[in-house]
Each structure stands twice: as structure tokens, then as C-alpha cells.
Amino acid sequence: MEIEQRAAQVARARAHLAKVTKDAEAFEARLQGVKEGISRAEKRRDEALAGLRCGDLQEDIGAARLAVAKADAVDLAGIATGIRQELANAESLRDAAAEALKSAEEWLSQGERDLMILGLDAQIMRLQDTLCRAIAERYRLGVDINGGRSMMLSQIWRPSKPLDDAVRFQVPPRVVCA
Image 1 (cartoon, rainbow, N blue to C red):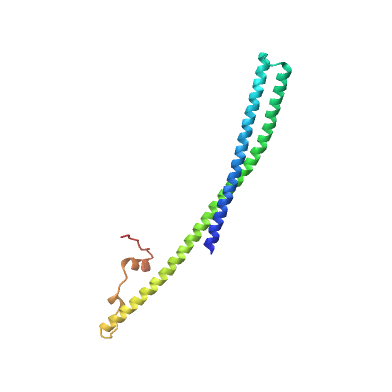
Image 2: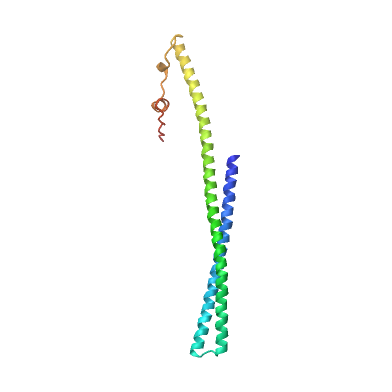
């Protein structure tokens, strides 16, 4: 059950990261749109200023266009400042969500390893039990063949070198693939 809980936590963390990433991307898009608006306002301001300088615009019309373009640029710059702050907050949330996802994935991975270890420990216990029963039966048969006389266990069975090294010297056996 715990693995399912850990997997569910990873799923929730992924969903949260996707949401806050989408939010951050939305703020980035809004900021880009405002920057484009500022560029258009600055272009209108420059065109109005150029029209006034070369005499293509009447002074009152040129001054009005210049004032509107400057006001638009200032207003949009203020909006951009607010969006930048919201974007910084969204990016901070996104970073925290990414870290939470990483932690959840590590927690899940640790749980999976723990579960594998428990399974391997149970398998080792079953194999040891089977080995001990087989050795006991082999010993009994050896005593029967020997006319009922006791024998040294080493006369009928010796552990393999990897098993002997593992038990006596605490050296893990090497896995050899066929």
C-alpha cells in the first residue's frame, strides 16, 4: 500500500508542477505581449516626434500623438513591472514544485528498493531453508549408506566457494551470467 501512496504523491507533484509551469508560461506570454505594446508605443512616439520635426504633422496633432504614445509606454511599463513580479513569484513556485517532484520521486524510488530488499530477504530465507533440508536429507542418506555410522558433514557436502566466502569472510558472491 505504501508504494501506491508514494506513486500517488509523485503523480500529484507532477500535476502541480505542470500547473505552476503553465501559470509561469502564461505570465511570460503576458509580459511578452506588454513588451510588444511598449515597442509599438515607442514607435508611435518616435513617429510623432519625427513628424513634428520634419513638419509633416501639425504641432497640436503631433503633440497629442506624442503625449498619448508616451503615456501608453509609461502605463505599459508599469503593467510590465507588475507582471515581472508575478512572473518571479510563479517561477519561484515552479522551482519549489520541481524540487517537490524530485523529492517525491526519490521517496518512491527508496520505497521500491525497500520492497525489493524485503522480497530478496524472504527469497534468501526460503532458499536457506531448502538448502538446509537438502543437506539434512543428504546427510541422512550418507549415514544410511555408511551402515548407520555417523559421518562428518564435510564428507558428504561442502559449500561452494562463493557461498563459503560469503559466510566465512563476508564477501558477497559475484553474479556470473551464463
